[in-house]
Length: 279
Ligand code: SAM
Image (cartoon, rainbow, N blue to C red; front, side):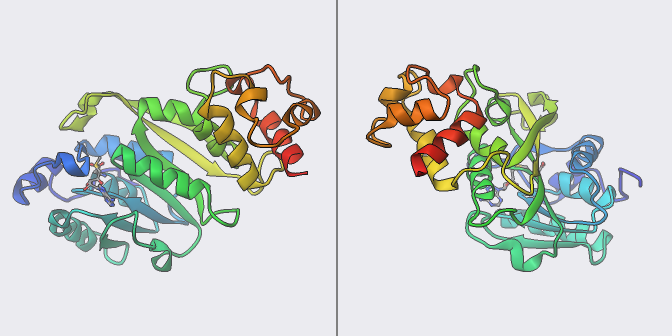
């Protein structure tokens, strides 16, 4: 499949539709279609899936996803100025691109999608983290998505894949790694974007597991992990005091020394502790 389509270069599209980047919408566009095709390939085999893309902007990643063979793309974009540029892409790929002009934090895209579904996005970082947390904490598991391929500020990407003992290890790592495999698959320098942001970025690919890696109740695990990392410098017997009255006994039963700190505790031990707390 050719990575580059026959539509005009993105710089021309942006000039033709006067799509000056708006800071308020976190607009840092990817204009190199070789790069967007490469990001699209990180999402895996697209030909058998519907793709949910959040924040297509002028459509660089959208074009990458379609040129790389996505069965169908549903793109949700808040900025109405982008609609004519996205309509041109829809015309070039009949029946394969649907665009919704709306806020991804408010609309439910699922009625427009047919499983299996993968998610791909280059989003403003604040919206990206909020959506990631929502996608990782649905009421039922497995979730609606098979995989998430998401651009983040590099520091956030590192928090998602962090291992115990590192500064980046915290709630996001536990949340992401409990029920998904999470990897950083690409690093991007600021110059890859127009305009260039201040920070480096990275693409994270998450694959949903059928079952959590270790059994635990999602709400109890979330409560324990939040309390542990809210006071990450404190020993767990102190930071978790409010979680259960006999927390020292429960820590020991979970194989944790009560004087340890949150960032030393593996996902497996946190799940064991959540089971002890729920007992
Ligand atoms: N995907 C394009 C690219 O890679 O060039 C644009 C990326 S830009 C970082 C983020 C895009 O998300 C912008 O087009 C912005 O308008 C859009 N956006 C921001 N907040 C949004 C929201 N809440 N819902 C949907 N789109 C949003």
